[in-house]
Image 1 (cartoon, rainbow over the protein chains, first blue to last red):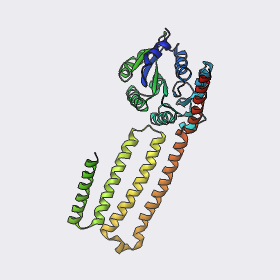
Image 2 (cartoon, helix red, strand yellow; image 1 turned 180 degrees about the vertical axis):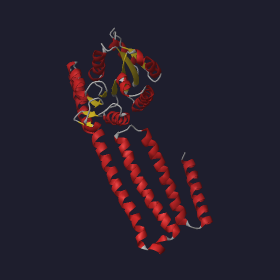
Image 3 (cartoon, chains in turn red, orange; image 1 turned 45 degrees about the vertical axis):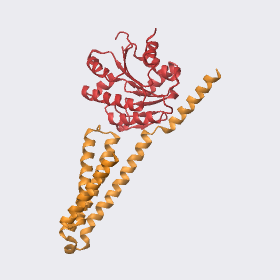
Image 4 (cartoon, rainbow over the protein chains, first blue to last red; image 1 turned 135 degrees about the horizontal axis):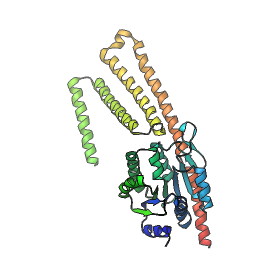
Length: 189
Length: 147
């Protein structure tokens, strides 16, 4: 049984959930595409993709190459620099300008999730590891706790991606308590 | 819950009436009460501003709102001081001009805050994209049914 099938099996009875997905750097891209495809293609669920790791343009191209219909997704890009680090909006993406601006990121996620049609929605947060590059561990822990609480309020299927790194292990262990599913998508780092 | 709110409201009104009876200057007491609300609002905005990320839109909005509330508070304080010390009788109408200035600037600050709010709506609003996604989901569902 593949990892995605295993994941699908684990969450099949959960209408809404928060899943922490750990993955190696090598398997990261493949896993992201497979997870998003699982929601948009297999289950016809729209969602929000928050990218802190790669610019929106790259993510979009990679997802489309992987067979994902990106029309079902609203993107929030916190990594592409904008003029004066100001928020900027295009047709299907909101650029935050900088990944340290967690206040605006929270508002953007709230607005995007609430704007999506239907009851079933997903939120894909890519990734926890990048958040740690720009913010301190306590700030990230507090933000993820806040995010987990909000995800419960939004009633979404939430996926938080994190790279399997030694330095993140402690934080991942701490965050596991907020999540319904902790899934190791494996691969060697 | 409603009972508790009603009892609290009645207690506040009775308290205000009692203070007015004791001191005998209703205008002064009501102005002082308004000031306490204004100060409370400033404390809450400052607390929120400290917690919000630097450079974020919501922090900027909080700053705009803070300026507006401060100007309104200045307007109220000026009015109370003039009234309490009877300055209008000494200096004439000119003593009221700063008060008009404060209220005029607070309206300008309100316009600034409203503009910022409108911009935030444009930046963070996703309703247009949402309609496209809704159509896409419907089309996909139809395609699946046909199969």
